[in-house]
Structure formats: C-alpha cells, structure tokens
Length: 300
Image 1: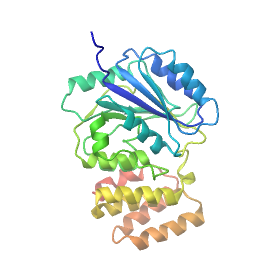
Image 2: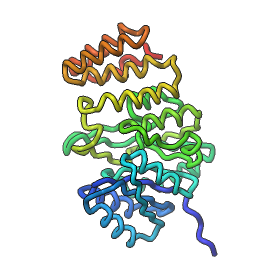
Image 3: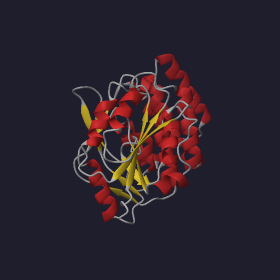
Image 4: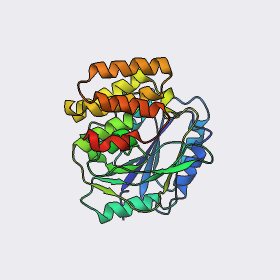
C-alpha cells in the first residue's frame, strides 16, 4: 500500500545557529503528529550547523531534506525551501525557536476542520530576555494594519497553502529586513480566508543577540525603507500614511540626530497626517509604548 502523502512541510532557514539549532530540531522531533516533512536550508553556515542538521535528519522517521542556498539572507533560504515543497501546506519556522509537541497536530486538525481556509494562524510567546515574555497575535482576516505594525504575519505565526505562497510571488530575496511583513502584505492582498486558532500559544520565539529585531534603534533605515516601499506598492498610495507612521516610529527610536533627520524627511515626502505623525514621533520619543494601537482609529 502506498504511503499517504504528508499534509505540511516545515521550512527552516539556517545560518550559524549551532547554539540554538538542536533545541529547535528537538522540538520538531517530539511532535505528537508526524504528518509533515521538513526542509532545512543552510545559508552558508561556517559553524557546525550543517553537521547538526545531518545528524538529526538521519535519526528521524519522517521526510527530511537538507538544501543549500548560496545567496545570503533568510528570504532567499525560505524561497529555496518553498520551491522544493511538495505538500499542499507550508509552515515556515526559524532555527532558534521552538514548538510544543502538539503544535503540528493542532495546525493539521485546523486545516482538516476548515477546508475553506487558506491560512491557519496562531498566537506566539515572544521572549525578549530570559525573564520577559509576552503573547503576540497571529494574523487575522484582512488585517493589513496588524501585519504592518504588529508583525502578525511573522513567519512563525501561521501556515498557508503552498499554492497561496506561490501565487503571492514567494519571498522577496532583495530585502534584508521585514521580508516576512512584506510577503504578508502580498498574501493578504489576495484576500485569503484566514482561520485564527484560539487557545494558549504552542510556539516560543526567542530574541537572539544578533537578531535584526533586537531593537528598533538597531534597524538599518535604508533596508527598512526598501521594505516599506515594497509594502506600499502592494497596499497602494492611499496607505502612504501607514508606511510613513511605521517609519516615524523607527525615527523616534533612532539616535537624536538620525531620528531628527528622518523625521524631517518623512514630513517632507508625505502630504497630510502631519499632526498625527509629529505626535507619534514625540510620543514614542518619550519611551511610551503602543502608539500604533492608539492611532489606529485615526489612520484608517
């Protein structure tokens, strides 16, 4: 009897993650359902990551592929994994995070119970330090604002039909930051049917010292502007005030001189919403959180 095809492929880009990779892979090994394949994409690792992947793959009883992507960047590695995926659903994951033993089963049950769904999403626990953790939401139906400002289309917060990822154009390998949010904008523009899982999170995201999301003040503004321009191209010019607000928040986190320069540039480039943008800058500069939520009713 032919073996039944798996439902989901988990794609994991890997670059020099020998410190955390075993933890991630072990969390996949302990899944209560093995109705999945795994694609690991090495992205020019110079440490022992490849050896760890090979040793782990040889001991599993589900399908594992180890691929290599020469073009540096998570988006390039994720795209390589996507193009090699043969299952109807794809779940992207990162090589420093973990999933609880029921995570894949939970996703698979939701897929089977909601045959009309194109995306299954869930909340995650986001660890900013050994003692600090908060729950962050997965993507909701049609919520472009949540994706842009709250990262609800972060790659560990949902799985989607492989055909949907391909229809959206896949990962933009030209982006060095926010490639997941940019892809999220293109996915949501296709008006997919999203089913958001309720209940406690089954994914833990651990912020690493070399993460590009370590802090707003460390983000490369040039790379951010490229990503935001791509997002704006998807959303349309009527949403230029959204991307301006996103950039203004980053300007407020930047060192004084750089932040002031960027603030003036934003106000020069956009027409309208200047009062709200100035308020967002001043509010965030004071160290106060939540400006995107506070202004949401006024930014629609």
